[in-house]
Length: 284
Length: 347
Image 1 (cartoon, one colour):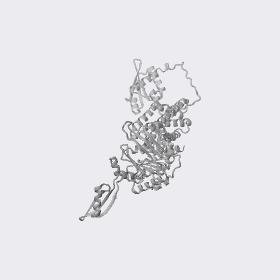
Image 2: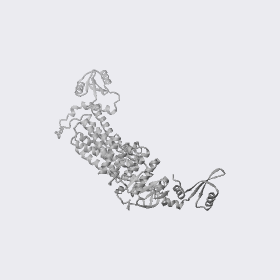
Image 3: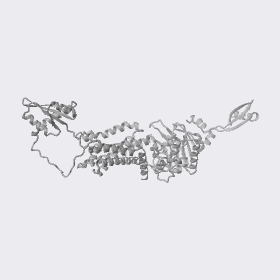
Image 4: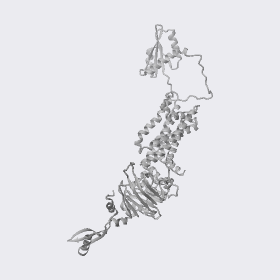
């Protein structure tokens, strides 16, 4: 559905690349997470794929069409949810969606139904300028669904949202995936990525360090631990022991046979820990 | 077409909610009030003269006094003291004392004190020409009036400002409105959302141009109807308003394409506004028309508007202005489309 080959981009038109030799493929109906800290090259890649930046070097294909050669009709099958709440502040929520729906040459969704999906039905006739940050974020998210896109670009879709609304957004994304929508999710939120993505790509300093499913990455790079809490001489003690290290394995056996264990949990590495392990950078 | 209608609906709503229509009506109302109520229909620009003949009254001095009597705005008084009293009371008046000295007439001007050298020279020259009046009445000069069927009539002083008001409000206000609208959308980032839809930049810009032209027509119709009534060549007036609004909006969109926000562009917006209104100097002084002013498209536009409001025979200025404005607008529109594409992709 999306194919990127040896993509480079420099804002200064020199060797100072914001995106360097980036290549990946995304299959139909897949949720692909593009993960990295701020300034890593996530948004630059998304802007190139959505035509907001030119292709300087490399190739990009969407739905088997070279985006360099495609017409604006390609956008009929694309939806883009921006991180920035870029809506018309003088128009109401429903007017924003109605205006946007008129820009497409394909059947569009009912604006009121979309607003209801994200809990904005009561604010439908309120000017967007009076919306809170979270409401604006939801409005931008619904706008990206108006043309029932086959390919959906989501840039930090849950940024600034409360846990309940975040859960609603995640459910909508999963539902769209089941309907066959391909999702390109740009985020630095590893929990969202872990929960939603079939595969993720780690990007830092414009380069992709790893691409795989969250589970495979954990198996490949993560370590499993056992977290044991036990009593010794009346005091509560805690130890985190690796399941792969021989010495730690012996210590687990020792504790199981001799100590008064109160709790014992296995603990997997998080995607964030894997990211730090692979890239050496934190996700901020 | 569906997309352009959608864009128009959106732009008209935003313009209405930003009070653009109200501003146009309000400014037009002020201009109508100023034209109809504050500016007089007739203004007497002649300087009034108080004169007196002092001392011995010879044949020459009496002849001069008789000539002055025939001049409109002059009044004979008893003497110099009365002249001084008179011009103190009337700041537009000047005085002239005529005396006889060694069989020759001597003239003494009594002025207000603030007249510049040019004015003083003008008084002397007009007196000289008056004294040589007999020589100027050359019987060989014949005046032939052509096209006598055309009755220009005398344009009332207050109505003579209407073309300038139409140049300023619909045309120049459109320039400011368009710049405001584009920068507002740049600030909101909505143009980026538009760019990931099948919509084209040209459609996006066309919608704004149509809005500005509509505001221009509304303003022109209001000002003209409430100052001139139905007396105008409406076809010419609406056509030239459309061309003028097209020109000002394409200039605004071209300028706006180079800047991210209105504060960065403000100096250019103001500078270009001043440049485009500069030809107004020539309106009341048609003889002052240096090349640097006449090449500005608003120069011919201003006279074309006058031609549409006070129809005469100079229709050439209308066609010339229409052609220039439409060509310049087409070039600027094409450049704007390219510039917007470039600036969006550069972002």
